[in-house]
Each structure stands twice: as C-alpha cells, then as structure tokens.
Length: 166
Length: 166
Image (cartoon, rainbow over all chains, first blue to last red; front, side):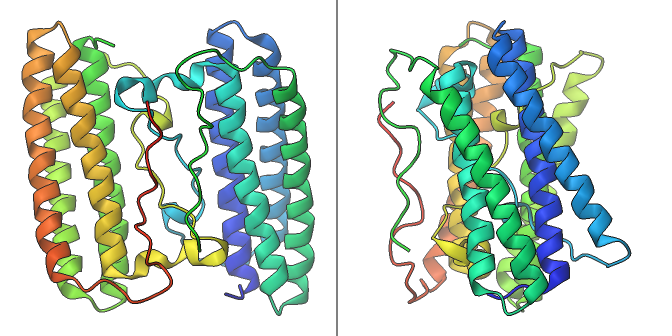
C-alpha cells in the first residue's frame, strides 16, 4: 500500500498518542511498585512521544486527516499467559520493558515498510525519519533490558508470540 | 487472584465498553465493503454489548470503581501478518469474524476463571452469568463463520497466535 500524506500523518499522530498513553500507564505502574529507575525511563518515553506527536500535528496544520480503526495504530496487548496472570504480569519491570520494546519494534517496522513502498517523496522522507526515532527507542529499551533481571518465574518462554508466516 | 466486587465490576464495564467500540468499527467496515449480512451481525453485537454495559453500570450504582490499565480489558489486536497487510486484512468478513471470536473467547475465559477463583458469592454469580453470555456470542460468531467462505489468500495460517504455555 502506498499512503497519501494525510493517511500517513493520521497513522503517525495516532501511533505517538497511543505510545504516550501506554508509557504513562507503565510509568505509573512501575512507580506504584517502587521501581523508580524503570518508571523514569517510561516517563521519558511519555515526553518523547508527546513531543513527537506535537511536532507531527504542527506538520499536519490544516490538512484533514482520515479517521483510523483502532487496530491500525494500537499497541498489541501482552500475550495471555493463561488465567489471571495475564492481567498482572507486567508488574515485572522485565516484562514491562519487553512489552514496550515489542510495540516500538512494530512501529519501526511499520514506518520502514511505508518508507520502502510509498511513491510520495515527502511521505518517504518523514517515514524514514520516524523509523529512525523508533529504532532509537528500541535501542534505549534494549539497554534497560540488559540491566534488568529476568524474573525466575513460570514465564520462562519469550513473551513475544511468534509471527505467522506472512 | 480473587477479585473484590468493585474490581470485578470495573473489568466488566470496561470489557463491554471496549467490545461495543470494536464491534462498531467492524460493522462500519463491513458496511463500507457492502457486506450487509456481516455488518448487521456486528451491529447486533454493538447493541448487546451496550445493553450489557448499561445493566452492569446500574448494578454498580454508587460503588466507586478502580481505574484499570488498558491491557486489562482491551481487545487483542489482530496478529501482524507482516508489512502493511496487517492493517487491512480485517476487510475480509472471515477474518473480522475470527478476530471478534478470539476476543469473545478471551472474555469468556476471563469470566470463567474469575468465577472459579473468587471467594465472593456475588462476584461468582455475576462472573458465571457473564461467562455464559460470552459463550452465546462465541456460538453466534461460529454460526456466521460456518457460512462465511475462508478467503483463498496468503493468509492460510490460522490468524490466532498460539498461546504460550502458562
């Protein structure tokens, strides 16, 4: 699919807004569990996402954007681990960071695919820029993951579900 | 985990509200693609979810409910099929119905697990009721799926990701 500029901008605003909201949830949860280091990582991410969203909105100006469906920009929910554990497992900083990383990676791949497929010069330029920003977020989360102990629980399996062959 | 009544009611209201919003999106999309049969199924689901949410809110009355995190009630997003196809594949009625079914099934399993684990008589009664309602929705979607041709596309693999061993 080759996006028009308004279609692309609508996705970018929605992705950044969604990211800001999810990072705020994660930051609040880490704070409630007295993990100030990871909480402050997520609060930085909230600010970056909000700033990025505001920059994109400034670029939008008076362009009318199409309305998107939720599944076009929403973060993937964490995988169900069976039963109620699903509702709580993000309390572990390790899982919260992995959850964020999986969604940043998805955003990066999305922007890259747009940049690679579009015929519009401006869309390509913006999408490549945004892909690089997401790549920086992934790298930042990787650094934090490297310092975060993996919980020795029943959640040994990697929480990322395998991607079906496309 | 054994929920208190306010915790349980907060989940139930959020789940029904989320379902109503997602069914509205699906109904609009099916209508835009001139699939009136499947669109009307989804519009019925919108009404059922809204009615159920309003009944639960009436039961809540003046009880103060806790604020939930998005991943505690949100529908799982469809699996990524790689690249941009992910953003469009729900245009097929078959995939839209499967998507809805997977999320109804998840809600049913959630209510069942609450009913099985709670120590609160009222929570158990309500959760068992709600599980039965979700089971009826799953059955209704199964009937529609049985009449809906499976698209002969590259999406041969079942769109439900395998659940990791809990």
